[in-house]
Image 1: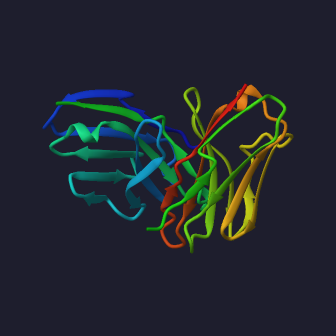
Image 2 (image 1 turned 135 degrees about the horizontal axis):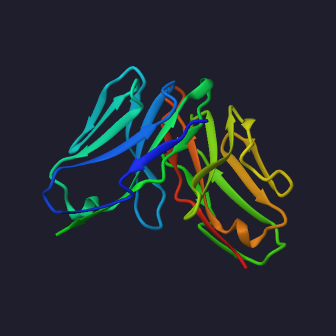
Length: 113
Length: 113
Protein backbone atom coordinates (compact mmCIF):
# COMPACT_ATOMS: atom_id res chain seq x y z
CA UNK A 1 0.00 0.00 0.00
CA UNK A 2 1.41 3.36 -1.05
CA UNK A 3 2.24 5.75 1.77
CA UNK A 4 3.22 9.38 1.30
CA UNK A 5 5.08 11.34 3.96
CA UNK A 6 5.75 15.05 4.04
CA UNK A 7 8.38 16.57 6.27
CA UNK A 8 8.27 18.95 8.01
CA UNK A 9 4.63 19.19 9.04
CA UNK A 10 5.04 22.93 9.55
CA UNK A 11 7.64 25.48 8.52
CA UNK A 12 8.03 29.16 9.34
CA UNK A 13 10.49 31.32 7.41
CA UNK A 14 11.22 35.03 6.93
CA UNK A 15 10.23 36.66 3.68
CA UNK A 16 12.80 36.34 0.91
CA UNK A 17 14.20 33.01 2.00
CA UNK A 18 14.55 30.09 -0.42
CA UNK A 19 13.03 26.92 0.96
CA UNK A 20 12.53 23.22 0.22
CA UNK A 21 9.56 21.05 1.05
CA UNK A 22 10.03 17.30 1.08
CA UNK A 23 7.82 14.42 0.03
CA UNK A 24 8.63 10.71 0.18
CA UNK A 25 6.67 7.70 -1.02
CA UNK A 26 7.06 3.99 -0.38
CA UNK A 27 6.18 2.48 -3.77
CA UNK A 28 8.27 3.80 -6.65
CA UNK A 29 5.93 2.38 -9.31
CA UNK A 30 4.11 5.66 -9.85
CA UNK A 31 2.70 7.28 -12.98
CA UNK A 32 2.98 10.86 -11.81
CA UNK A 33 3.38 13.15 -8.81
CA UNK A 34 1.41 16.31 -8.22
CA UNK A 35 2.04 19.22 -5.87
CA UNK A 36 -0.93 21.21 -4.61
CA UNK A 37 -1.43 24.31 -2.54
CA UNK A 38 -4.35 24.70 -0.14
CA UNK A 39 -5.30 27.99 1.48
CA UNK A 40 -7.36 27.89 4.71
CA UNK A 41 -10.99 27.03 3.99
CA UNK A 42 -10.33 26.61 0.29
CA UNK A 43 -9.91 23.83 -2.23
CA UNK A 44 -6.66 22.50 -3.63
CA UNK A 45 -4.85 24.34 -6.39
CA UNK A 46 -2.60 22.29 -8.65
CA UNK A 47 0.91 23.76 -8.74
CA UNK A 48 3.03 21.28 -10.65
CA UNK A 49 2.61 17.87 -12.21
CA UNK A 50 5.63 15.64 -12.84
CA UNK A 51 5.28 12.56 -15.00
CA UNK A 52 7.24 9.49 -13.96
CA UNK A 53 9.60 9.93 -16.91
CA UNK A 54 10.49 13.48 -15.91
CA UNK A 55 13.03 14.70 -13.37
CA UNK A 56 11.67 18.17 -12.68
CA UNK A 57 9.11 20.80 -13.54
CA UNK A 58 9.25 24.55 -13.09
CA UNK A 59 6.61 27.24 -12.81
CA UNK A 60 7.71 30.73 -11.91
CA UNK A 61 9.43 30.63 -8.52
CA UNK A 62 8.50 26.99 -8.00
CA UNK A 63 10.60 24.00 -8.98
CA UNK A 64 9.64 20.42 -8.26
CA UNK A 65 11.98 17.48 -8.66
CA UNK A 66 11.30 13.78 -8.74
CA UNK A 67 13.62 10.87 -7.93
CA UNK A 68 11.49 7.80 -8.47
CA UNK A 69 14.14 5.27 -7.54
CA UNK A 70 14.61 6.76 -4.09
CA UNK A 71 10.92 7.59 -3.65
CA UNK A 72 11.43 11.29 -3.16
CA UNK A 73 10.24 14.64 -4.46
CA UNK A 74 11.09 18.16 -3.41
CA UNK A 75 9.32 21.44 -3.97
CA UNK A 76 11.68 24.39 -4.08
CA UNK A 77 10.27 27.86 -3.54
CA UNK A 78 12.58 30.74 -4.40
CA UNK A 79 12.42 34.17 -2.76
CA UNK A 80 9.44 33.31 -0.59
CA UNK A 81 6.67 35.87 -0.07
CA UNK A 82 3.93 36.19 2.58
CA UNK A 83 1.44 35.25 -0.14
CA UNK A 84 3.10 31.83 -0.34
CA UNK A 85 1.76 31.01 3.13
CA UNK A 86 -0.47 27.94 2.73
CA UNK A 87 -0.44 24.19 3.16
CA UNK A 88 1.43 22.34 0.43
CA UNK A 89 0.33 18.80 -0.40
CA UNK A 90 2.14 16.16 -2.36
CA UNK A 91 0.22 13.35 -4.08
CA UNK A 92 1.36 10.34 -6.10
CA UNK A 93 -0.72 8.53 -8.63
CA UNK A 94 -0.86 5.69 -11.07
CA UNK A 95 -0.18 2.54 -9.14
CA UNK A 96 -1.52 -0.42 -11.04
CA UNK A 97 -2.74 1.78 -13.87
CA UNK A 98 -5.18 3.57 -11.59
CA UNK A 99 -5.71 7.32 -11.71
CA UNK A 100 -6.10 7.46 -7.93
CA UNK A 101 -3.91 9.87 -5.99
CA UNK A 102 -2.49 9.11 -2.57
CA UNK A 103 -1.87 12.25 -0.55
CA UNK A 104 0.58 13.22 2.13
CA UNK A 105 -0.65 15.12 5.16
CA UNK A 106 0.93 18.34 3.91
CA UNK A 107 3.43 20.96 5.08
CA UNK A 108 1.97 24.14 6.52
CA UNK A 109 4.17 27.04 5.39
CA UNK A 110 4.18 30.45 7.02
CA UNK A 111 6.23 33.22 5.43
CA UNK A 112 6.69 36.13 7.83
CA UNK A 113 6.97 39.70 6.49
CA UNK B 1 -12.43 29.71 -17.29
CA UNK B 2 -12.74 25.96 -16.82
CA UNK B 3 -13.11 24.86 -13.24
CA UNK B 4 -14.81 22.24 -11.10
CA UNK B 5 -17.90 23.51 -9.33
CA UNK B 6 -19.55 22.06 -6.23
CA UNK B 7 -22.85 22.73 -4.49
CA UNK B 8 -23.70 23.44 -1.79
CA UNK B 9 -20.60 25.08 -0.37
CA UNK B 10 -21.80 24.64 3.19
CA UNK B 11 -24.36 22.28 4.66
CA UNK B 12 -25.52 21.93 8.25
CA UNK B 13 -27.90 19.10 8.95
CA UNK B 14 -29.12 16.92 11.76
CA UNK B 15 -28.14 13.34 12.33
CA UNK B 16 -30.27 10.95 10.31
CA UNK B 17 -31.02 13.35 7.47
CA UNK B 18 -30.12 12.71 3.85
CA UNK B 19 -27.35 14.85 2.35
CA UNK B 20 -26.72 15.25 -1.37
CA UNK B 21 -23.61 16.95 -2.72
CA UNK B 22 -23.21 17.83 -6.39
CA UNK B 23 -20.23 18.34 -8.61
CA UNK B 24 -19.82 19.60 -12.16
CA UNK B 25 -16.48 18.41 -13.57
CA UNK B 26 -14.44 20.29 -16.14
CA UNK B 27 -15.87 19.70 -19.60
CA UNK B 28 -13.90 17.04 -21.41
CA UNK B 29 -12.37 15.44 -18.33
CA UNK B 30 -13.04 11.71 -18.20
CA UNK B 31 -12.31 10.94 -14.55
CA UNK B 32 -14.13 12.26 -11.50
CA UNK B 33 -13.06 11.76 -7.90
CA UNK B 34 -14.73 12.28 -4.52
CA UNK B 35 -12.45 12.97 -1.54
CA UNK B 36 -13.10 13.68 2.11
CA UNK B 37 -10.79 15.84 4.20
CA UNK B 38 -10.62 15.86 7.99
CA UNK B 39 -8.00 17.15 10.38
CA UNK B 40 -7.31 13.67 11.69
CA UNK B 41 -7.22 11.66 8.45
CA UNK B 42 -6.23 14.26 5.89
CA UNK B 43 -7.46 13.66 2.34
CA UNK B 44 -9.08 10.30 1.66
CA UNK B 45 -10.42 9.02 -1.63
CA UNK B 46 -14.02 7.89 -1.36
CA UNK B 47 -14.82 6.94 -4.96
CA UNK B 48 -13.89 7.59 -8.53
CA UNK B 49 -15.39 7.28 -11.99
CA UNK B 50 -13.89 6.91 -15.43
CA UNK B 51 -16.13 7.77 -18.36
CA UNK B 52 -19.02 7.87 -15.87
CA UNK B 53 -18.46 4.25 -14.80
CA UNK B 54 -17.66 3.68 -11.13
CA UNK B 55 -14.19 2.15 -10.82
CA UNK B 56 -13.43 2.23 -7.15
CA UNK B 57 -15.61 3.02 -4.17
CA UNK B 58 -13.64 1.07 -1.60
CA UNK B 59 -13.14 4.21 0.50
CA UNK B 60 -16.86 4.72 1.06
CA UNK B 61 -18.98 3.29 3.87
CA UNK B 62 -21.29 1.40 1.54
CA UNK B 63 -24.20 1.18 3.93
CA UNK B 64 -24.75 4.92 3.96
CA UNK B 65 -22.80 6.50 1.10
CA UNK B 66 -23.53 6.32 -2.61
CA UNK B 67 -21.91 8.03 -5.58
CA UNK B 68 -23.30 8.35 -9.09
CA UNK B 69 -22.70 10.12 -12.38
CA UNK B 70 -26.08 10.46 -14.09
CA UNK B 71 -24.43 12.29 -16.97
CA UNK B 72 -21.03 13.67 -17.97
CA UNK B 73 -21.75 17.07 -16.40
CA UNK B 74 -22.94 15.93 -12.99
CA UNK B 75 -21.59 13.74 -10.20
CA UNK B 76 -23.42 13.25 -6.93
CA UNK B 77 -22.46 11.98 -3.51
CA UNK B 78 -25.24 11.04 -1.12
CA UNK B 79 -25.18 10.19 2.55
CA UNK B 80 -28.26 8.54 4.04
CA UNK B 81 -28.57 8.57 6.99
CA UNK B 82 -25.94 11.10 7.97
CA UNK B 83 -24.00 10.82 11.21
CA UNK B 84 -21.89 13.34 13.18
CA UNK B 85 -18.71 11.48 12.18
CA UNK B 86 -19.46 12.38 8.55
CA UNK B 87 -18.68 16.02 9.33
CA UNK B 88 -15.83 16.96 6.99
CA UNK B 89 -15.04 18.84 3.82
CA UNK B 90 -15.96 16.87 0.71
CA UNK B 91 -14.03 17.63 -2.46
CA UNK B 92 -14.75 16.68 -6.02
CA UNK B 93 -11.92 16.62 -8.56
CA UNK B 94 -11.77 15.87 -12.27
CA UNK B 95 -8.84 14.61 -14.25
CA UNK B 96 -7.75 15.32 -17.81
CA UNK B 97 -7.48 12.50 -20.32
CA UNK B 98 -3.81 12.72 -21.17
CA UNK B 99 -1.82 13.48 -18.04
CA UNK B 100 -4.34 12.71 -15.32
CA UNK B 101 -3.67 16.05 -13.68
CA UNK B 102 -6.43 16.47 -11.12
CA UNK B 103 -8.29 19.73 -10.60
CA UNK B 104 -10.25 20.26 -7.42
CA UNK B 105 -13.49 22.02 -6.70
CA UNK B 106 -13.94 24.41 -3.75
CA UNK B 107 -15.45 21.70 -1.55
CA UNK B 108 -18.64 21.22 0.48
CA UNK B 109 -18.21 21.77 4.20
CA UNK B 110 -20.64 19.37 5.90
CA UNK B 111 -21.60 19.61 9.55
CA UNK B 112 -23.86 16.92 10.99
CA UNK B 113 -25.26 17.80 14.40
